[in-house]
Length: 400
Image (cartoon, rainbow, N blue to C red; front, side, top):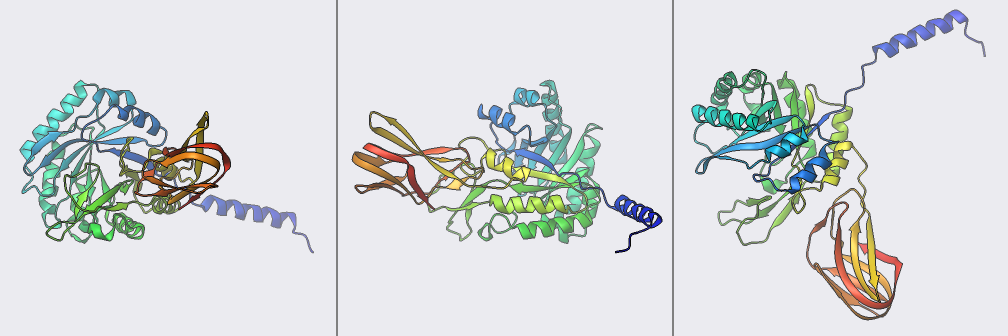
């Protein structure tokens, strides 16, 4: 084959360099933030905050709320703990969507006292977020409320709002978004709960449409939790979240699928809509929060890790008495398996615990699930006990 002349090689290098220089810079990674939504902080918040520091840059903390009959109330936030944590903070003020009207004077007074008390404790939020599910027809009044509120905030404090996809159909949305520094588009729990908690395809479509309306930074609020639906006499379901309701009836559990959220996060990182500044996860989980992902799973999704499920049967033996446990050693929370089987030798006695019933044969112990629950990533659950002459520690099977 003929070889290229030095001139042609040099020109080719210039062309390649020019083309390389025209390539867009790689998109920066999306910021990851956390909502803290517990109305009363517990000692467990200390460890949860420490374990979340490396993965989530900013905390958005429920601080104050107004409800139609209950009036104004503050969340019992551990301010010394927030001060020690040291991450940027945004105080969230929840104004119930069922309020007959927004009382500007009361809101200003409540927010001013809140900020003064936080600052006296050494905690200075860098922003204020108003969480109000306004009807689309009331957006002009909501815009006027935000403009007046902003005039009375400290000059350096940023103002943001939680936003609903339903507002996309309103001609008043651009003016509303101009009144604030940023918005948080909520793409979960915005439809009839019987249709599910979250739709990743619809969430991506909403984000794209929002990017065409908003000329300012916006975030997506994404779910890392579940709810239960209870039947109601009027036909509409009642939603039970982190606080159990004193109501009888079968509960239909809905849980945001970590794999769906992981896939969406990957799509957004690879091709983010214009002005998308980051993702905010709802909510920081605490131990015992049975309707939230574990922090291990949440961090794996936020990092873009491959989600993997893996069971391990663990045995603890003393003088022929075995305690039998099931450990979730993957990074994905998992529902209890339907059955766990162990190969054994000559068991004198055995039984299942924690929602498992034992079925025994001369060579096997079969633990059959009787109730539903999940085991958090990194967690474990006792299955039962057995007094046997031997259990083959490598001969066990877990069936979904």
